[in-house]
Image (cartoon, rainbow, N blue to C red; front, side):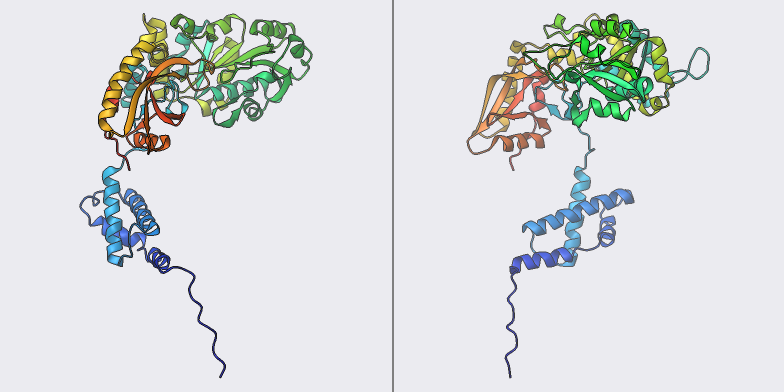
Amino acid sequence: MAPGPAKRESSVPAEIGSQVQALRAMPSVDECLRAAQSAPELAGLGAAYLKVIVRRAQEAVRDELRTGRSGALERSAMVAEVVRHARLAAHHDEPFLRPIVNATGVVLHTNLGRALLAESAIEAAVMAARSPVNLEYNLESGERGDRDAIIEDVLCALTGAEAATVVNNNAAAVLLTLNTLASGREVIVSRGELIEIGGAFRIPDVMTHAGARLREVGTTNRTHPGDYEGSIGPDSALLMKVHPSNYRIIGFTAEVPLEDLVRIGREHGLEVVEDLGAGAIVDLARYGLPHEPVVAERIAAGAALVTFSGDKLLGGPQAGLIVGRREMIARLKANPLRRALRCDKLTLAALGATLRIYLRSADIAREIPTLRLMRRKPAELRMVAERSRSIIAERLSRDFNVEVCDTASRIGSGSMPDAALASCGVRITNARVSAGAIAAIFRRAGIIGRVANNSFMLDMRTIEDPAVFAVELTHK
């Protein structure tokens, strides 16, 4: 009798096989839900929320089984482990958006929400959240009103424009402007101004989705008046200027000033619109900062419309502001697309309060946090760094080196990219812990700094109270 085939040995290690078996034996969501509902800490939770945290708890148990942190469990023990994780999740659950400490030194950090609001703007937003407001209601006539009335008069007073409107961000402002004034026609722009803004959004792409056709003129580094004049034709709708706020070209360069572009436009019956991006309302040079084009200057130079952001140099909430000629603003307001892009009452309340500071305050730079942070001096920052160093050193073990050092801050959000602000910070190193691991220790405590030159840095430009570092720092 011929011998049977040899029995094949399993190529899967026994411990892996037991993990796979345990993973397959995970109790169902319904079974875990029934057990969770009997736990006093979980009994009062809504059914949908309880299902969410039970699923998360199951995944946590699976992760423990995969990594070997938990051995094989009986079914009842596995259910109990899921319920334990669910109880922990419910106890420690936090909103997705949580306050953090910005110690990056970037004043307008896009990923951290950009501009901090002034106290009066915060109060205005809270009031609008708590109470019905006259958002689109005329208290004089008792009839429906225009929500732009909340900000239009103040914006016009600050910029010298005839009229104004506001949408939810500056990209939306550009989109609305081009769709209204140039859909199906050409918009002439210098190649050196075809910028890409945050999140890979590009001016040419915004233009395409607005229904306009891009007509590039000049070269990347040099554009002359004749480049515009030679490109104007029957399909030309607008001349457009874009402030390259998030980069600089230096060396052999040339651009056409706004005043010259306006002159060319008038000679050919075309209007000029400008995307000013960061949009300073006041001359920042008065605070010892580099000069940025001021909106009022651009209106005075003849731009028919100027668009700019609310949450950059203005120091307000996210919004796209459009100021300029009355008849052109009226056309924008009549575009059905504007309704899809409009701001809500919270944004308008905060924006209105921010603009009133510029109009009425005797000390704008003190009341607008963005301006206050940008103009802080190194001597003040060193005092904050010294106090912060003491607090942080008390919370770390002795093998961490915590020292005060000079550094440089940035404005952020594409604003004044070549402006390095002299600052002071706290540098933290450890011979056995990488800078990235140190950054993780602080992130777990809600403190965001930056990693550079194999060290972790906390920049004091964006820190006004060293007490924010009085937290528990856990090294896993």
